[in-house]
Amino acid sequence: MSDLDTGNLLKMAEQTGFTILRQEDQTLLWREYYLEAIWNDSFCCEEYKLLQKEYKGKKLRYTMLVGRKE
Image 1 (cartoon, one colour):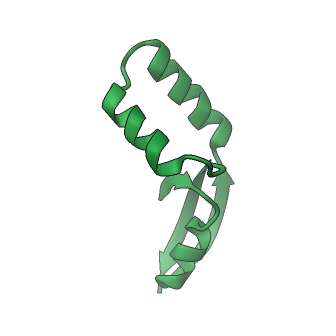
Image 2: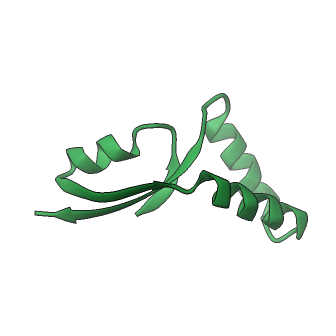
């Protein structure tokens, strides 16, 4: 699983019964993709506005988790 993370993604995965096998911070790669998408105009402006509104003022990371549900 990978997603935008305000610091609670790992906790959410564990609370739903997953054992975390690996966790990686992919923030630098996400930023590179995000900026390239905006630069190449392949990122929809409406999606960008929604992201800005939802995560305004929060420190965002992009986290990848590999887990197993027992």
